[in-house]
Length: 345
Ligand SMILES: Nc1ncnc2c1ncn2[C@@H]1O[C@H](COP(=O)(O)OP(=O)(O)OP(=O)(O)O)[C@@H](O)[C@H]1O
Ligand SMILES: [Mg+2]
Image (cartoon, rainbow, N blue to C red):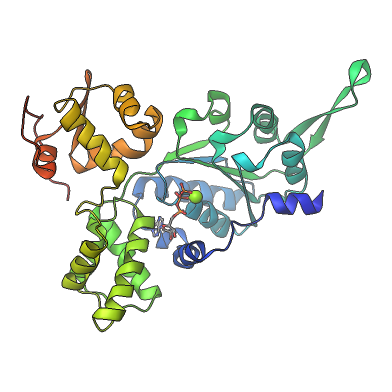
């Protein structure tokens, strides 16, 4: 069991990209850029738990990929000065997998459950009592002689992470004392992250170079760090190792990174609204069907960034492209878009 549990909670595979990411992860809350309100809420919960010497409330972190959920999970353990272990929804195939892990959990430790929306129903149900009053109900035996045993657990802190909060069931969500949303980062925040990462990578960069990378990072620190890595390669091979504005622009253009960091699916969504549906209004289900994505993924992962950029507008009748989107995608106006949002970038 011990060996199996350790496999189930083992760290993610150590390939190159993951190692690179891990190396750039901030370790303390103070080094975590942006998400001001969320950080304040966390800081209060952390300080209170420390003061009382108790386990901190369970936390559910949700938001699009690459915005810092796993990083925050590790930071919370670090700030609480407790061990950290992690697993993920799809890894826990059986109730036994979960009970094995939970019975070995230490007092106050952080237990991080990634992709918590993907738990199997019976595993999820077992988690309810573990989260609520720290015990496990185990059925021993079969047939009429079967008995439920209640096994007490150490008081711990669960941190659930998901990109799809719409898929987290109400009973599960209700067991988290803190439910916190991560939002896309603005350009000045991403610029700070790029500058911090450059320092860690010992790569000289000027303010304009960092800003150009930030602008094209799709509001996402993970993408900012990845772009920085590519631009650093270019700078080292073609430009004496220093990243300035010209180097950043040339390298990013060469990589065909969109000026606003839009990825293929962002572009598909915008072109569908603009070209297939005359700028909208069009329902999210229709957009989803036409590009072969799930409506929830569009709503939770893609739309927030397109709205933040001022390309898409949510109206009661459906999604509408803005003037700004018509201009950027150079689509001739048929029915006209709604007014642009204020300049964000
Ligand atoms: N606020 C931040 N400040 C500095 N770096 C950050 C911040 N948020 C994220 N990062 C960096 O971005 C990378 C991705 O973050 P992380 O793995 O925590 O994202 P995630 O939300 O867990 O993504 P996923 O949904 O894919 O699991 C990490 O390498 C981390 O260094
Ligand atoms: Mg993660």
